[in-house]
Structures are given as structure tokens and as C-alpha cells.
Image (cartoon, rainbow, N blue to C red; front, side, top):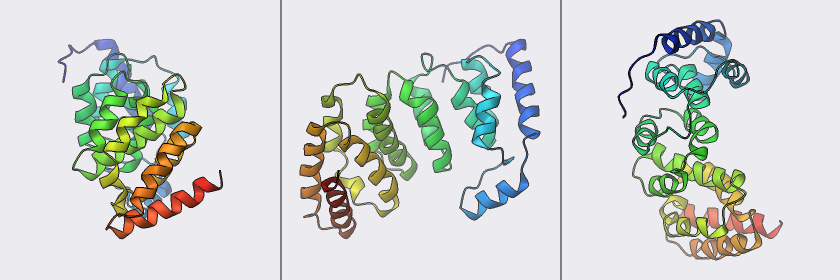
Amino acid sequence: MDILIDDPVVDGQFREILTRIRRLKNGETVAQMKALGLVYRINWGASIISLRDLAKKYERNHLLALKLWNKQWRESMIMATLLDDPELVTEEQLDFWTKSFVTTEIAEQAVANLFVHSKFAYAKALEWCRGKKHMVRYTGLHLMGRLAMVDKKAIDEMFDPFFEVIAPLIKDPELAQVFYRSFLIVANRSDELKQKCILFLQEATEFEEEQARKMGKVLLDDLAEL
């Protein structure tokens, strides 16, 4: 991680944001999130909409984002993804944050708000899909789908390498939901990619693992209706 010299103005914004986050406290939401398995060291229960509105009051600032991330509150981490500057994000930072994700919520917010806009997005998505840890693989799959959704200028061939690394992921029941969502987004990007997805799924239905065969069939049925 880069070592950045603290700034009094940024430190003031940091403390101000923490105060404003506390005012968004919602105990009922915290309880609901815990029931869903979303457990954080500190969670004030602020809604994503409220955090987005709060982020609009500040300019993007890399140092501010790093300070917010290091606080490790649920809300401060989400704010960090909203306020960081994609141009200043490093590969090391992307890896560090991804390896420290504790819930799928933070992974999805980081991908949607920041990672997808990084110049390292394709390389990292591919690398993380090859990862060994669940949250790393989850983030890689989610980023793959997000890139297919928002990067309208990318050529289809940018997604070809993913077909070489996602076979192990279709076999993992814990990745079923994110695999299904992201794979459908890639398939819907173009007719050419749809055909490549169909070929991959036809092979998956012949895999030993029941999860892969089941997912392959479900996705083939859904693609046939598109």
C-alpha cells in the first residue's frame, strides 16, 4: 500500500463523515442483517441510499477513502468505495481490500462503486476467479459480470479468457448465485458471447460434479428462452 502523508482537511472530513454515519444508525436494520448472516465488527445499519447521498457531499479523495477503509466499520468501508479515485487505486490496494472482505455486501459495493472503473479490472477479475478463497472467487465472478454490464466499449474478446478459468467455479455450490447472475450477464452481451456460453455450459453438463451439471442445465434452459 502507498504511504500517504495525512492532511488536516482530509482528517476533518474523515471525522465529520464518521459523525454523520452514527446519525444514520438503525438498530432494526442491524438485527435484520445479522439474521441474514451479514455480521460486521461495527455496523450502524445505515441504508445504501443514505450512504450514497452522504457521499455526494464530498469530492473523491484517495487518502480519505483509505482512512475510511481502515476504520473497518461497515458504513466506512462502503463510503471508501464511493469516495476513492479509480485512477489512483493500485493493484496492491485491490488485492488487499479483496482479501479482507468479510461479507458479499462489501464485495458487491466495492465492485460496483470502484473496482469496475479501475484500469486493472479485467486482469484482477481473471486473477481472482483463479483464487482459492471463497470471497476472492466471489469478487472475481461479480466483477466479470459487472464489466460485461457496464463496459460497453470493450470488445467481446476481453471475456474469452474467463471461459478458461471458471470451470472450477461452476462446480462450487457456494458460488451458485453469483455464478448464475454474472454468467447470464456475459451471455446477454452479444450473440457471439451467448454461443460461447452455450458451448461452455454444454461441456459443464458432462462434468462429474452434480452442481456443475445442475447449473449447466439451468443456465442452458434460461438461455434458450432469451
